[in-house]
Amino acid sequence: MLKEHGLEPAAERSKRMPWATFLTAHWGAMAPVDLFTVEAWARGRLARHHVLFELSSRRVHVIGITSQPHADRIKWIARDTSNPISGFLLGTRYLIMDRDAIFTSEFRGFLKHEGVKSVRLAPRSPNLSAYAERFVRAIQEGCLNRMFFIGVDALH
Image (cartoon, rainbow, N blue to C red; front, side):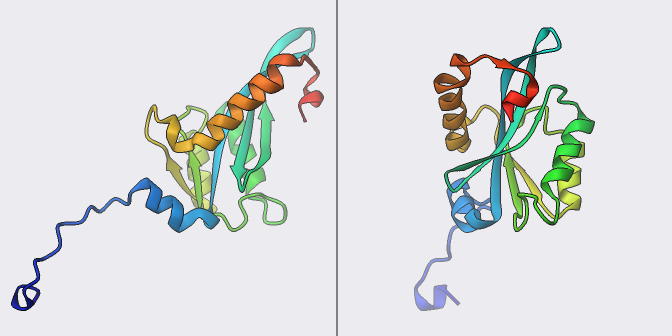
């Protein structure tokens, strides 16, 4: 029909959506998450804590802090984020995360059960989560590298 009217058929379109198009189309229904580490003095030793945060609309929401980033603890954090009353995932359809080992298959499976699709960023591509990476750099250089925390409660 196109040829009859002097029009060439369109080139074959890719089945994958470009990243910029995905972001524009789903901005209100997604939440990017990332984590950073911070050291705190607790129980007579310096312990490393992992801080999981969500960054959207130029606001940072700390999701959870753990010194033991194993599958059960991260799953507990996921359960807390999907709380139907106060969880930050309310109205979220996509959770954007990097390929860090802390985002286990159990974590992603739990999110899927809650109706949230996990979107994992391409390996070694910090530019895809530039705002989160910039926040981590700013918080570490401007605050965390200049402070000494005593006790885990000081991190909250």
